[in-house]
Amino acid sequence: MEQQFEQLSFEAISRQFKEAADFVCQRVVNREEVVEQAICALLTGEHLLLQSRTGVGKSLLAEQLFAMFSGARVFRIQASKEQQPDSYFGALDIEELKRGRIVHNIEGSLVDSEFAFIDEIFDANDFTLRALLSVLNERQLMRGVQCVPARLHTVIAATNYLRVSEITEAILDRFLYKAVILPDKEPYVQYKIAQQYLLHSGKPVTPPRQIPFALLRYVWRIVTGQHPERQITVRPELIYFANLVIRYYEVLRNRALREHYRGATPPIDFYISPRTQAKALDLLRAIALLHGRDHAVHEDVGKLYFIFATVGSPEEVELFRKAYTTVLHSLSASNGFEQLRLLLSFQSLLEQLRRDKALMFQPLTALTNSPLRRTFLEWLKETFGGADQTVQQNKRVLEQFLRDFVPCCEEVRELKLALERELAALLQSLQ
Image 1 (tube, rainbow, N blue to C red):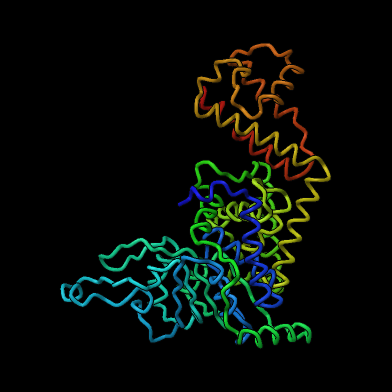
Image 2: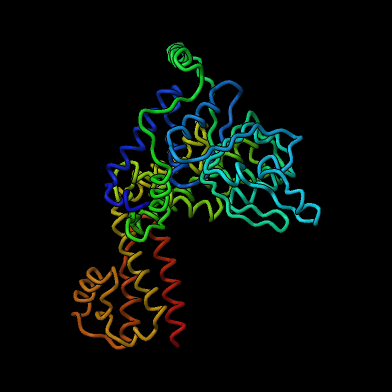
């Protein structure tokens, strides 16, 4: 089925998803940022949690988003404390239960659906929430002896409040995207909402053009780097830049926490897990694709607050933007991106030598596959006349390359120090 999408350009794909976002924004007034975040959640195959007071359109937003796709089943449920896992996974097979085996009839359940909307998710009891964890994260139903792959692509959950417990923290971790929707009392916005209500009574409508769910899955494979041929490029220096921004944002969030607690140690620090940080690459590719590009650019990093901050929380979003602009200005004002590119290419060279130490006994000029080759050879020619090197000379060349390198800013200096340690470990292993 994917063959029918192979001829679509990234611009054509982008246009379809932008049209879908525009249609949702017409129906759900003044929620453009949350809609863009939700589209990114769909493209990356992740889940979205919406928090707000009652009556601000969380259900309409979720239902209208799902209505933009054809060929996908939607599971809907209003959570409550009395529910058991079979409300989500299907009724228990009575005959299997007589044999002491827990087996769910999953037809029409959460496990058997591509999309799901869970309203008031934190009204569910902890036992049921715990049972949901593997379906949300691993896309597997694991109950008793039953282990079934779930069709689930994206869950949108809504809540009026947050309930804090060990289990709810685990549930929150499964929702990579989070948003707070605040009521908008501006008269003109309320007028536009009233217009939509008069037209459609607050219900989702079928758009003039739906996106096949198969296309969404096709794009998801591209965005998550699973398509063997169609790729969205994220250059090494851009990945490093994104990681610098994320780290500084983490520092700013913890600094704000300490200020909130008047300098005392907060009860819990703000922490970004390596798993979440790695998934930022999928979001970078999704943002690039939404702009019709086959490569990510610096500006895309500025949208990573979609997963690291709560959309709709001005303080969190502003801190991320501060982290982004601070690091961007530091690198842009001093040729930092070019230096990052050079040092990361040098790191690639070290990795090549680490994997095959026999290469150290050849002239470094023979490493034709190194992305550093052109720059490194130019430096080698200027410094040593381009002569072929012995193993001892190769060691000196590598050491002198870093010794001669003058970092333009603190972020680059930190990377240089890390590479000096990596080079020292490599040379030590050769003794």
